[in-house]
Each structure stands twice: as C-alpha cells, then as structure tokens.
Image 1 (cartoon, rainbow, N blue to C red):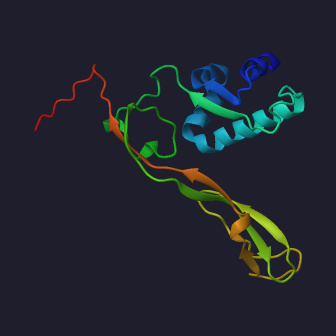
Image 2: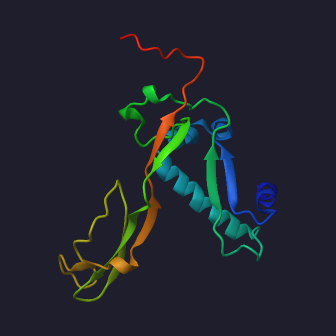
Image 3: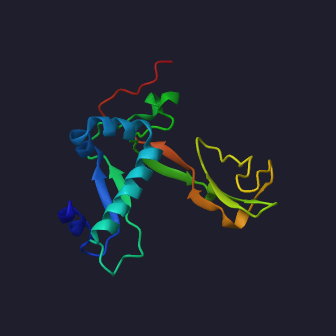
Length: 180
C-alpha cells in the first residue's frame, strides 16, 4: 500500500486514480455497491484514503494541507451504455457514456450541510444532507425546547454542480437506422 501512495504522490500530485475493473477483481460486492450507489461509496473512499495517508505520514510536509482526491475510471467498455439504452433504472448509478459536450450550465451551489443555532440557549449543530434533504433539528437537547433552531446560512457548507448537455457518439457496430 505504501508503495502505491509514494508513486502517486511522487511528483506532488494530489490525485489517486482507481480502475473500477481492478476493484471488481478485488471485491465484487464493493464494485456492485460502487455501481449502484456511487455518491456514498466515492465519499467513503475519499475519506478513508485521506485518513490512511494522514496516519501513515506518506504525504510529507510539502502537500500536507492539500486533500487527496480519488478519481474512478473504467479502462474497458463494460459499463458503456448507449444513449438509447438509458432508462430510469440508471438514475443514481454509475454509467459510462460517450459524447461531445454541447452545452454547459453555470455553476449551481448545492448545500451539503446546514448549520443550526438554538435561539434560546445558542446550542450549535450541523445537519447533513441525507437522501437529498437536510432535516432541521426539532428538539434542543441542551435547553429541552422544541422548534427553536434557526439556520445560519453563512456557516453552511456547499458544493458546486453543473448540468451538461451531451451529443451522443454512436457505436459503429450497431445499426441505428430508423424504420419509420
């Protein structure tokens, strides 16, 4: 494990590439979980790798303030889906598509954690994004009051997302003639 980290961090790189086919050979269940729920698994990978590197002290003093990022890629066309094969079952799952980016939206901020403060006792708590929702705390365990929390917007955490429009590149081996 240390040898892999040193190779990746040798030139001050903060990127760690993982081929998901290697992951499938190592642990098929983990591969299946990655395909079915990539958001959770990628964040767990990210957190775990950063903790391992911090504990092993393989980063060195040059890049200790930088965060290591994991990038998953697929070296074969095993996950490749054609645009006409996509359906609602592919929502929140990892797929590989080919195409040209035609249009790109502006950056859209998305709240990933909210900071709440009790208006009675000033108790502070973070609430994290779960299943697309951030739940406001109802009960303050410190002062034992209900519905006293207020959202402090400036201390919330956000991520950036962007929507893209793709022009598909069709596979040459398949016949895409319209029979109308």
